[in-house]
Length: 378
Image (cartoon, rainbow, N blue to C red; front, top):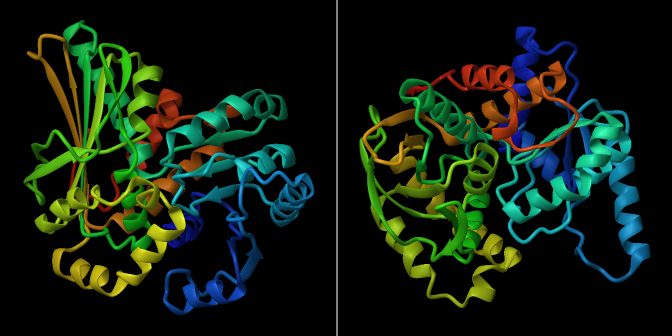
């Protein structure tokens, strides 16, 4: 996902959408940076490597260690006009270390965080500081979460304009074939989500439900068709519910091939402490990479999103759909589009969820993500 974002930022530079683009990539080691270039994940034109490791254990009681970590990150990002954080999985993280460093250095920021508690902490702890420092930042950006929240905001606005009634329900539905070419990290993130209660909103109140339950079959339209999906935690649920004032919101996800969905369901039998162990799940996903890549070649990489906004009586529905042929490509496109808006100044100083952005920024972002779509109905 980081590599895709880099390629799209470079593409936006070549089109003149961004001027004088100079890119650097932060990795734990020079070897991982070189490997990414050899594999074509990063374009060969990107020469600058920055040593950056966010995986130093958090909540360490040794303040000297924590200060050393913060100082190392601050030193690594000095002099940049924007920092983009795509180093997932985000599950289990509790400290917005990189965002804090950006606010202190007065550097705009975008991330693709899909962990609600971390996003809340980012906003709660750093909102005032970011506004005082005049630093714009978007958390939970990317394709989903991210663009899907903008789809929800747009669908709600259209429903209420057409009917004169309040939006009562937002159903968020997602499908990705295989890993969407995004590789083992998205698999390990899914494993972690299977150990995370799915946060939903019912009648204006937050509730936690068992993940990978309450299946539905949803029509994702041309190129995808009907697919089964299951409840899965997604920060778009609480951010849209609270920001847009919609009392009923939930999110579901499914994948191809069909047996993978049942495998995910079966994995919930694994003890939750192990299933929620970031290192163990990442190691398992890396071990499984050959079969993951093989399946990806069989099923493709399609990414589909659907949002349904409904009135309380269920008689009126506005449906939005966006389908891309490749998740890895479209998540980079979406993340780079958020970067463009931050750099253009359409996003005010502060820490923002996508659903909170201005109408101008929302329109620009949804227009940008239309590129390379199989189908687009927003």
